[in-house]
Length: 285
Image 1 (cartoon, rainbow, N blue to C red):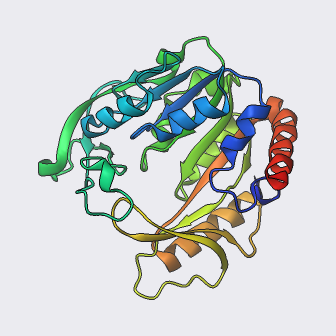
Image 2: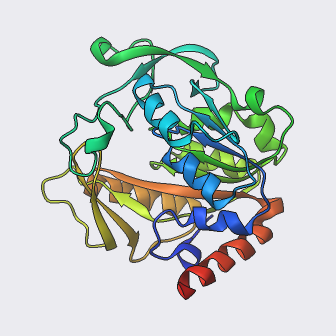
């Protein structure tokens, strides 16, 4: 089943990071680190936690190093994560040109790069990047928190982490979800409890149907598209019905994403206690 995360996260953007101060510190992973803002956020929320960050796109590395380069607790691996280590094709559909509202300072940055197959014919925007497996990088360590945002190849990241997942050695995962059943099935099969968080609506239709949503923030993405942060007015939490609902809403809107929170069953009670403490602290501010 998919549990509603609204009672814990409410209308707070990226509220999962507010939970980190109330958790035991430990190794954290930032997979798809981009310009490094979330690595820095993890470090600010949990100062005793080291972070291993993974980012393959050369255009993002100067920004990451500017943001985190002086932090001895941060290790940057200039590679993508995949269950097939070696070298793979990496497609970057667009980069910030410097005129996008709110993104002017990140010229050359891209948040949309992702691994593609060898048969992809968009050769003018494809480069070769190194790929690594999470299991091999982390080894026998325990991961307290892992953020995974890799533009559609999240399941490959999970497959590269199967030793860790099967042993319950990644306690808390924050993973971008586009409706793929493979992601939720992989997590559930490895004894993870799933919660949704705020949804990102990216209308690709001329007249999108947003009637089923409580929208609390609008924004402009690095691609120049307008997007909305929202929670559904109603939804089911059974897995099959949730996936059907997600697919139907995605068809209405064009682009729909959610960062699922996956908590290993052995850690679920501690997570809910930490999340509630974070909610109470936020309400008091």
